[in-house]
Length: 212
Image (cartoon, rainbow, N blue to C red; front, side, top):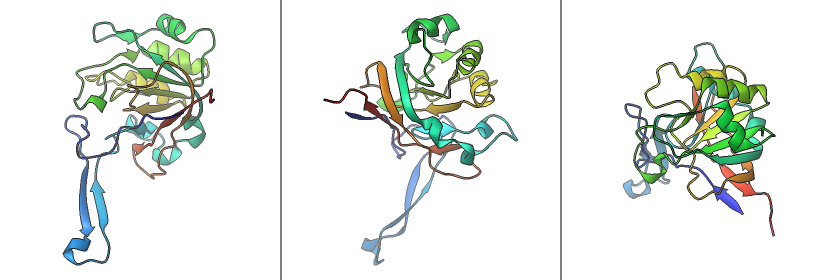
């Protein structure tokens, strides 16, 4: 079974407050006498499902063309954050309980605080910076979330971004995990090959490992 876990880039998709929303205009239209329909868009790359590049949080770090495709394709584990009062952060101990003895190379966190429902959430669970460091030490290459960010909404230091992106791991944000059970899957979510930007759009899908 294939699960599409992408949030679309569309005019109806909630952008980060203050960011550039998605807008689609038309350069050519058949109904205006042109021979083709030809669309053009203006958008932040953070609208809808996307991968952050290291440049997003640090000048001089790699830009979007350095988003390694292999990191976004392969086995992945979906876990669900405990539904505690916000804001709260997931510690190393909490992750050990959620992940078990073997740390996967790719993990997707379902927080339930997602723009997929049409509203921008007030906040969401995140990793502690110590937990992010520990995951990378254990071999993590990709951390994905259904929330708009891997850091808290009002964070200015972006500790989790720095802990992951600064040590060679990658980030997926704005996933739609509402209809996906916790467990192990195959992830296929390569970012578009965009050059020189701080992020890139992604079409993300999960494939169930046990097909009948």
